[in-house]
Image 1 (spheres, rainbow, N blue to C red):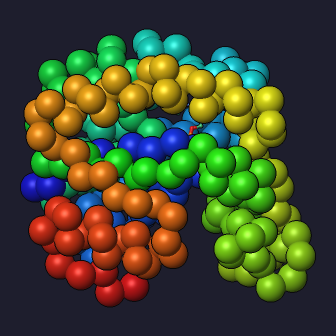
Image 2 (cartoon, rainbow, N blue to C red):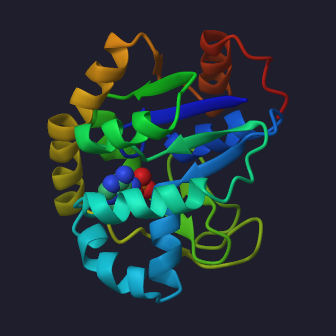
Length: 215
Ligand code: AMP
């Protein structure tokens, strides 16, 4: 059983690297941000509660974030383990998490704020299947259309200058201390998130002592 946490500022590739890490190792990839986006898209009660908060780039309240995460993990469909991204994001969430789950490693995707801004403002998301594109590094073949499902590409509501400033501030204020907490327990592998996604994934796997990524 392997349990990993992926941390990193927005646009550092948490979801992409989380999915790549899970693939081939039979791990379940859990993205807390994706769960909240699913609720918003499907107009659930939780979606109504979090929509404005997310669009403003703010963090959802700890009670709800913890409940959603605990409920997802309680499904126990992760026989061989999981890779979770987007949780924990502050000290309280970290304590909650460590009370229930022992973790094998924390991957910290390190990206300078200037690069975050460049990446996030170029990010597009398929409204059909949810795949991430980037107008700098990963352009769709046809402008505005998903290569995989033909869905329309949209900008995430929280990928604006204003929301990004809030998220970056929150990250350094609330999430950096979590990294320090994990680092004291010697869990953290800090990986340079600037190279291409395959290279970053190789680096992660080397640092965690895992078999090479096969694509
Ligand atoms: P992400 O896709 O990880 O950037 O998450 C998108 C948004 O979902 C965040 O800006 C928050 O509003 C919300 N969110 C995701 N994970 C958490 C969390 N652990 N605690 C609070 N809010 C979260």
